[in-house]
Image 1 (spheres, rainbow, N blue to C red):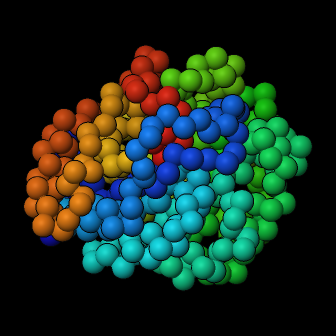
Image 2: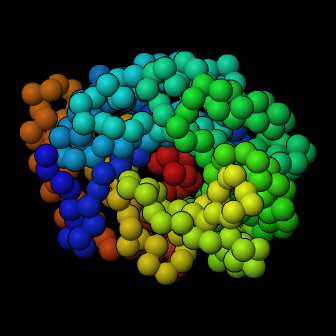
Length: 326
């Protein structure tokens, strides 16, 4: 099986596949005014997704994460998950969700082949959660996490975007939550995008600040697992759960990049903060196009830059994270 390697020596095993840019939440840092449709083109169909993932698997990618927007707003979400999970060569299917449909669908999605799930929880305070997301859904989301555990997901992680002056005082609450719960909390640095510059300037907090607090409390760094994402993960002997920190502004963050991104309309993005995507959709209509699809992806990978330029406030063409799937 071929292995995709870019000009900087990084190998790629992980596809983040957005299946919709629609989101039903209005998170302050992403879509404060709610979803606004900007493209008349339809989203990739299950058949197109099947052709894409098949080609990617033949190039050596073995992990797929279904993202959005909110991926579960699609009525055919379980069908897509089953199609992806049954693709030869795909060993792990994950998804990232706001969790609003998780409680009633956890078993269905697990049976469809999803084994790992990330659920967004930006606050454990009910009112603060509602203020951040635009919905009073904290209890519903927490019930969904319980349902995911009962359904037998191999990995359950919680995504929490760090927001200075909003939720940065909740570290103790999150730590208490995982003292006896086998969950991994992912603290994610707020990233600047094309539409949140003022919000970013007010609320960005460095992941290093959280790491310093964990160090002082006796948490130690874990070794990265195969196919792992960009998080640096920490553990503590007194806690059943773990903490991960995703710090895109940290030194050498891009050195471990192992992922490609495809949008809900079939554009390959070599970086979350790159300057535009490359459409693959015309190559997803029939399995007879697989050779050309694979050759195109391999060729485009030669253009991958060594690092993003977020430190210089260059956010590329990404208006908000929902547009590319984060």
